[in-house]
Amino acid sequence: MNNLTIRPAYSNWRRYNEALRDVVAAMTDEQLATRPVPERWPLWATVGHTACQRVSWLCGFAGEPGAETTPFPDALHRCPGDEYLDPRLGADELVHALDSTFRIVEDCLDRWTLDMLGEEIRRTFGDQEWVYPRGSVIQRVFAHDVWHSAELNEALVLAGLPQVDLWD
Picture 1 (cartoon, rainbow, N blue to C red):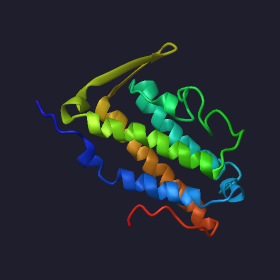
Picture 2: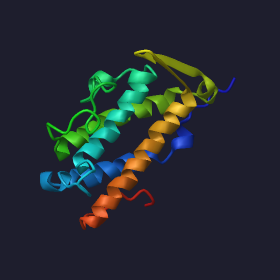
Picture 3: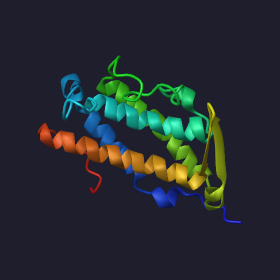
Picture 4: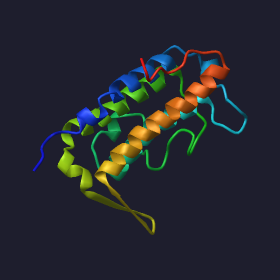
């Protein structure tokens, strides 16, 4: 039995979250309302969606506690971008969302062990059953964070704004 936590495998994730949070904290409401192209979400919605999906997957799907400590207690059914573009979230609200949802991530990194990663998590939504190994869930959340940070960077560079530096 291997009781090592998975935190070492995601050792840079905290820094990635801090880099994203710091860029968002410095943005104005006008900058956050920017849409890179008309058919894409405004930047605030991309950031809010990123934070909300942490809660959706870790709490809503994997059953972890903490959703009520975030702005997204019903993340399975209501996330920025996915279900709404109004009301807009400002920089302070997004910073709170990133920080509060990352506490859930950190709790998982500290409690989940290598042996737990193969456990299947099963949930039924409507008439559809979803089955994912626990390791796939955490990888999905991590990859989702990085994906949207890169997407945000694309928009930030076009707007002449500082980027989220994942390589510092």
